[in-house]
Image (cartoon, rainbow, N blue to C red; front, side):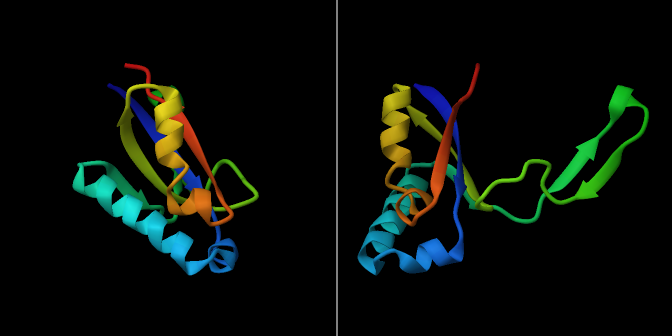
Length: 108
């Protein structure tokens, strides 16, 4: 099986606009994924780390990349194909609650 990193973007307003039954189904989907051993979590506040030329570590608070929606969470999933990974990601809270999920194949 191939491994994929998913990055979910979404905000509270989009979540609140989504029918509660749709959100509940998405959370149940995530719970089943966790039971199967999928690593996932809600995103906290990021820190940028640099160590140019290995000479000095510097940090800056906040995300390096800016997006229309904030990063809401991450997971590492296994799927046979990219299409299968997309299908799995399409049922997550960010995907159904007016957000978006990126699916990144991991190069082994």
